[in-house]
Image 1 (tube, rainbow, N blue to C red):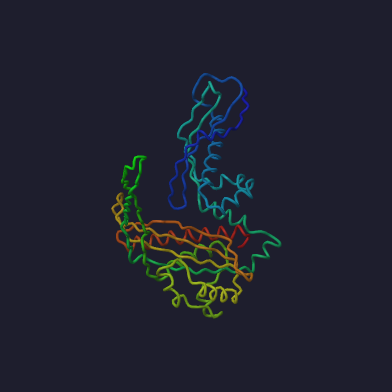
Image 2 (cartoon, rainbow, N blue to C red; image 1 turned 120 degrees about the vertical axis):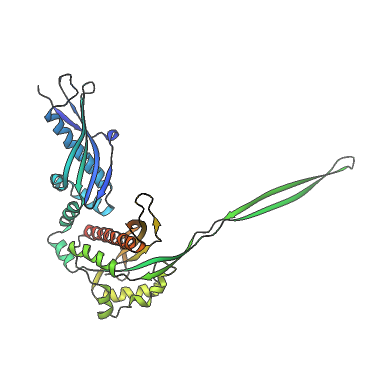
Length: 358
């Protein structure tokens, strides 16, 4: 029996289950294809049919894996779709078939598979794709990068109760009839408004050593040349961060005057790309599942090209939240900060790679 197999990616059959363990990402997908000709009346597909459906399931899983990536990574994959698909098996750790059924009435074979992808392998592959040759390579060779992030922790959160204001208004209408009789009618109107204010959060700026180390590790492994902000302070008359860290107690960014002075020093050191932002550590709470302390860290960032007279924003991150667990608040906070810093650095690297910078 000879069958002509046609691949059909059935969006209606998609079922996705995602779990992340370090660099392993598992996604469940359904592959479905339509065959031609007659087949035996059995629900068990042949090895060839099963293999074809598995390949389609892997493509379905890959599409959903890509959907969870950031915009810069998706852009690189879209530009290099053929190269990525040709190397798809290099990203797959293993495939577990959960179910395989032939529907003789519909002449289809459906396979449900759980596909495990190597997230780090995908990241490294995309970084290699982003490294151009010729003019692009020459352009990126002198594009230094630096970053300045403020690590903060919440010290107080002031919550405001709702404030209700009620308004009542009474009016009287007088009517005079033809015979001179006077009729008065009273009308009462009531209304009001409710005022709600957002929480007032106060921060304390903390050491950024752990943050800088975690980010630097990712940036260096990606092959991007960067200089630390402390070296800009020492060599290009930059303002030490300690002199303006108080600006971050009640605000999420430095003042315009400070920002101008910082960027002037960055440009004086021939740094073209500069990222700024905040990494905020919240107050610990008890995780109901593990019983450990849980701390959330929120990150936000802006990436600038400062080579021109006016800086141009070429990327941004967040605000995004990450969490960490630990036996006490200190450990949980360090774990959350490390995760947030690495993910922040990865996103910045992807945005730099999307510009052809390595």
